[in-house]
Each structure stands twice: as C-alpha cells, then as structure tokens.
Image 1: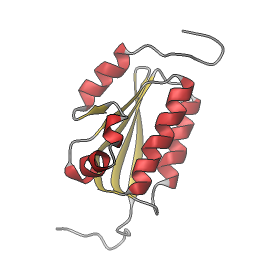
Image 2 (image 1 turned 180 degrees about the vertical axis):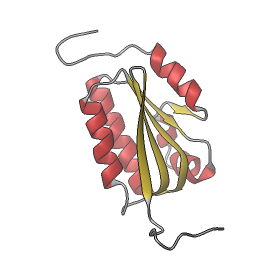
Image 3 (image 1 turned 60 degrees about the horizontal axis):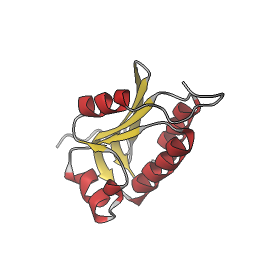
Image 4 (image 1 turned 90 degrees about the vertical axis):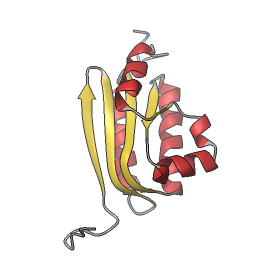
Length: 134
C-alpha cells in the first residue's frame, strides 16, 4: 500500500458535480468524527440551492463511522423537509455494513451504481419548493 506522508490518514475529500438539475456530492477517504463537519456543511449548502435531486456518492469512502451515519440522517431529514429527493450510492462493505447493521440502509434510497441513482432522482418529482411547486 502506498502511503503519502504529507497527508494525515484521516483525510476526506469532497467534490461536488452538477449533472443537469441533480447534484452529486462525491466523498473519498475516511468519514468519521474528525472529518464529517466540512462535507456536511457543503451538502447543506447544496440543499440551500434547492436542486431537483441530490446523490451522495460514497463509493470511494474507505472508513465509515457513526458520524457518517449521522451525516446521512441529517441530510435525509433536511432533504425530506425541503422536498428534495436523495439517493446514496455505495458499493463496498466499509459503508454498506454499518448502514445494514444499524438498519439505516432501509431508510435511505440506496444504489450501488451512480447512473441508477441519477435515473431514479431525475424520475422523482420534487415534493415542494420554496415559493411554490415546480
């Protein structure tokens, strides 16, 4: 395994990609109590823009602790309140196992493939918007 000594081991990178009216937040690295605040703030900023849908892509997350679960539940509550469809993309045990053990995976729209999530999010109508319906 190749380690880079110039980066601490608890690094989490966040990338935001807009695909049409759906926004994808890609997270890569370790999602734990030391790294969750910045991506949570960025996802909440995305929700402030009222996209037609939001996908959180966790396929590159190597560690997923309880703070990651809390991040998803916070985002789900906010997206639900704002009427923004949410999909979570994950395909590896580091993320899927904690979500299954806590049964949070049953509360979220889970996808193993990002294109499937995008298709589903484009197909779901927004429930409510600021200033009326779409």
